[in-house]
Length: 100
Image 1: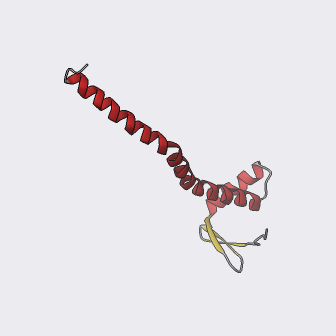
Image 2 (image 1 turned 135 degrees about the vertical axis):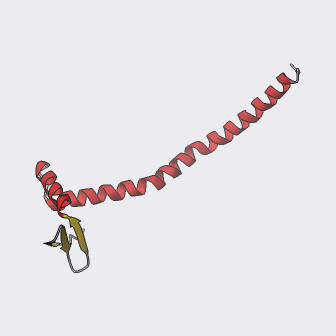
Image 3 (image 1 turned 45 degrees about the vertical axis):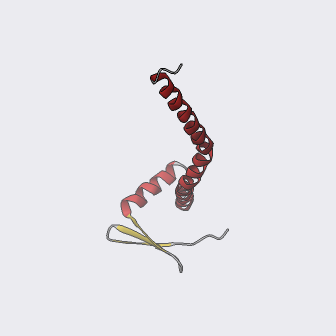
C-alpha cells in the first residue's frame, strides 16, 4: 500500500495539499476541526483523513449493495404478496356476490 506525501500551504481561507499527482483544497476551518479531532482521538492528521476517506467510500458503495440485497430479499415476497392479493380479491368478489 503506497502512501502519498502531501505538502500543505494556506491561501486565503483554504489549505491546499499537493503531491505530484494530487491537489486537495480544504477550508481552513475544516482542517482545524479535523486536526482537533485527530488530537482528541490520538491520531495523526493523515490517519484521520485516511479513515474519513475510507468511511466515505464504504458509505458511498453501500447503497447499491443495499438495493441489491433488498431486491433479492423482497423479490420472492412481492410475488407471494401479489398471489395472495389475487386470492383475496377473488374471495372478496365471491362474498360480495353472495357465493359462500
